[in-house]
Length: 334
Image (tube, rainbow, N blue to C red):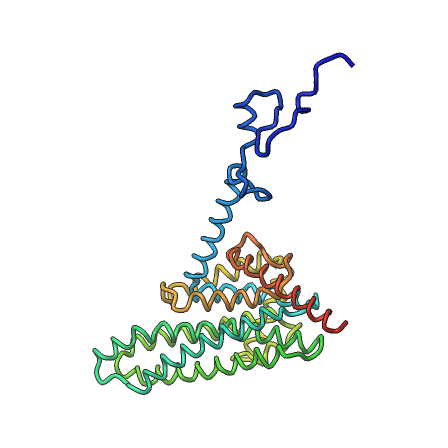
């Protein structure tokens, strides 16, 4: 056949640009040269934006883990209160790695609380100046203990109800042990407040108002779980929970779950953020506790663009760990 010979018929050396008829400069722009060491990998010249995006996301996640304040756990309590009923009705299995992380992070945080509060009891301040020096380290712990009780009581209620519906497991003893340790820390905190009122009554009254606010909001959020859960068991005031439950039923007819969650989170932000320290005392542990809880929820229940979007990535890590655990379990049975 007479005509123009096929241009690519001549053999090419490895790494040379293909002869596409575009010229050498155009071919280099279209097909960047790769070194021998980069064979089989993505060229950084072709995908620079993807790698930059991954670095930004990782930096955002690390920043979130290092700055997660106690108020974020309070807002997470509202999210669980609204989505807890749908989680129980779905009947999904609780994340094993998430439960383990929740227990280990909670235990470490409780140990730090106990160490700080016990030090105040062992060496009580002799005068007002010594009290002010010690109070700067004790006050944030008191705030974490009292406000953190919202999340502990809510997640204990949901997890225990899950075991009651779908068969007993190790989850109920784990979450109840965390709750009992939290109640012990609460008693220590109240003891510290009792002895501190002799030195700074105004500051003790401020923390006591936070305690009263936390108790009332705990009962309000527990009412969101009724009638699917026996929420009154862990309530501060069972009668108040039942009264709130009647208002919640009327609210469900007027608002959807997303609107209710945003409304509750906005109200919690307004109520707690001015009463809590601006600095995070245990940010990494707070993030680990939150991620351990969220690991058990379905993707469609979780808004990946919401205020906990960084914890969404941690939830995906737990999903992979749980999948590997299930595979190992099936292989062991077979």
